[in-house]
Length: 591
Image (cartoon, rainbow, N blue to C red; front, side, top):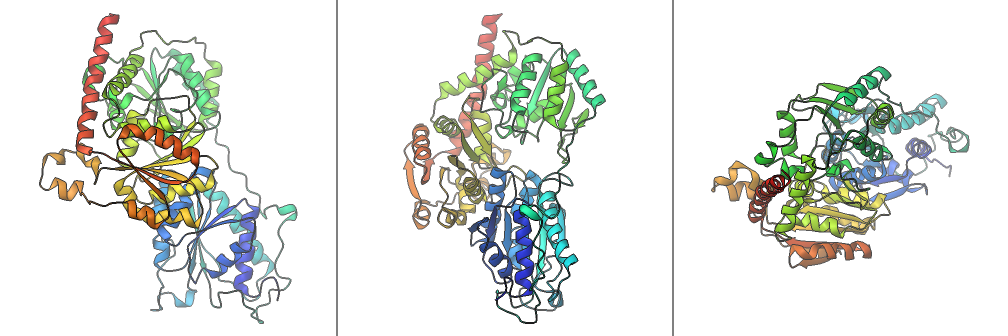
């Protein structure tokens, strides 16, 4: 039997070979019939690590998490019909969160489109503008030309490059493959596949080597920014989600040291947890919620903003009220100004801009001993320490205490990310924070976290609420199917605790049944069903040591802690009030 017994096997084999040459290492495959040629092609290549997940929605979020941790796409494969539709939520998140994804959907052949044939849906551009690029793949031919096979290889190279940001920001690419039967690798004598496959470039090189563009801001623009920084008497640096990694945190911290500008660092900026500097602040969601403190904080003359919009509503409200010249700096193609606050947007590599500005500045450290920003930060953490580990928000502080150095924390949406933002103080411990903050849904959380765990050799801890856990219990199957290791911290407050912050909480009924939605579920049986160790902890104060032990063991563990969201919200508001009292007490002493 030839290497490719029929046209489908040749088509899929050539395409997968070129993906490997372009750098693909992982494929996430949801089982199905029409995708058989692609599934066989991936399974026959030892260079590809295959993750087989049964539920398409979970599979898609697993691929999303894997790519988020690895920084490169995994191939995501499914059969035709609603299977492709179940990928949609993860594709929306990948697009919004600028995460590369390579979506390979199998389809019926064109003659069956709009024919009434079973399992036929319109898959052409099914993901709309959420796909960075769509290609309706040619239907495999019995005697394909060398030019057609070369084009097939080029499409594979382009798909990888576009997903990584060739045309714009990284994101999902969708290729739709129509296949006629037979789908299996059986011999079809009339398919002339012998000597047709072009073997690709020598030494495993891709057919078309594609270099991603470097995006640097214009020199004159950077010079004007440097002059503005030089002349500013006061300033502030805001780091939102997805700031650059690598050398950027150290470079930005050095700029802050030269200027004296405090850095308000969102947890997902990945500046808050790492090499410690007193100018990196994390208590702003608390102290900017205090009207008394806001009266004293100086109005910054200049605000430098990096990354996406920050999580904190209090910070965004503050930025909307102050009268400052606000500059956003970055190379994303997404517009990051939902409140129309920007005076200037500088498109370009943020690290390059920061280094150029720092090199030209003629400044010495301008951080006064009695900086009100630093005083407010200290007051926020003192108020938290006085409250202790008895309220819901303290769970995230406990988790951070238990996280090992050089680890990953995957944080769920709704309350967990907000509690992390407000109550996890900056530390020198290196903890990388990941999360699905593109569309900020609570679906697919477990699958995304376990996908990230599959891409990393570092300890990974997921923190999620009970509704996020409930939405993605199917994702627990990845513990078995992909043999991943991770710790899940389940904060169980029996419903949508985030709604306690809304004015609707004052109206009960219908608040409890239609917003809070208590469900009364016990998740221990779910853990048992999926073969995951389950520990119900007695009290939030035990969470730090439990996380430390579970992360060290590198097993498959769920740590559940029961909380009261109403009491937690009451405590949070008390902390804000107490922060203002501490700030003014210390301020009066200094005066």
